[in-house]
Length: 75
Image (cartoon, rainbow, N blue to C red; front, top):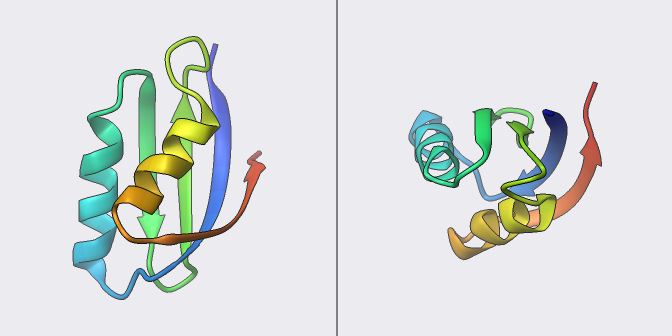
């Protein structure tokens, strides 16, 4: 089963940030796919909730120095 998560973050300023986030999230077990867009400040994540939680994703982003503004299930 795959769930979608849309996270609004502050602190992304360039394409390097996007790549850094995607690489870090890909290392988490259960992440199927992630994309980050610095212009909108959004990170979209497809994940398997049996292996990783939305809280773990949020925590990883915060560990990297990004401020999580909000998170919602994405379509």
